[in-house]
Length: 362
Image 1 (cartoon, rainbow, N blue to C red):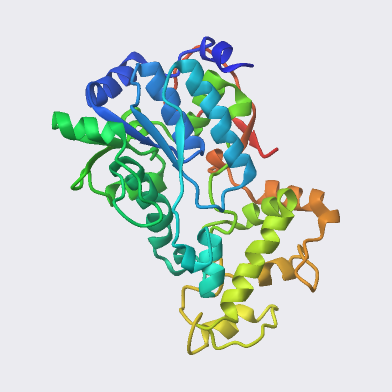
Image 2 (cartoon, rainbow, N blue to C red):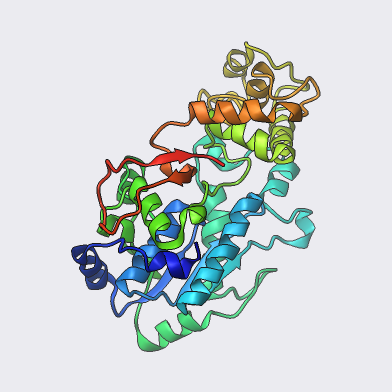
């Protein structure tokens, strides 16, 4: 099903939802932070149906995104071109040449540490996602990432208007909690959350994408392949679909756990690993961080569950088992992480969180 055909199939917004978006956003200069996941993709669908056209769209590539996510960006650009919208601009942080690395993964390897999220902090997201997108708009006067301001920024400054950044937080519990913790404006931008204006949960987002663009356009979760927020089912999926990336993530963790910040010269993973680390007197001695998974070590998990051999090489012959384990562990609340298999495509707009949808990963 092509986007054009799918978009003519059914409405995804009620008139009240369209009006809510128009009232909040019409006439504003709009910048979209596109994350390439379900929420941000559904946000584009909702805006398109409401007749709200953004002025600029950006996607931050940390260098750790999975190939399937980068492919989704390309597929969405084809949709945007058909809509007559601006295409998604990919933004990347450009480190100084003297650092010896080009992305967040290389940064962690060089510094023998883990992404800041592994320690409960957000600096990796700010440094490698937020700042590159801000600099894409505002420009940067110096450094390896120096660039002139974007024409949209210059136009906003000339007119005295503020740019409104749209963020894809939905009405699920986690995103409602996140959006309460952020401000509605800062020195440079105003912020708005279209999915919350239309009261969409993740299931609503999945349904809207399937209705408007086709089920094959429902993306998987967008995250670095070494994301500390990954759950066990996601690790099984990563080992099955991208074993080489899983091995690189395991190496990152081992590199950090025996690095300059650690008391360990060598590691002997096993059932007692977490207890050993929790009693350590230096990194990673935090009671909340015992490895890349914060509360668990990816290496230990992979060994104990037979995902890798003793040399930390993924057992590629067991791909089907990994996929079966991923499916069995993934809960019904992970709509954004799943590929939609079947859905009753009717003409009724929805904001019903109880919509029954069959979800499964490819």
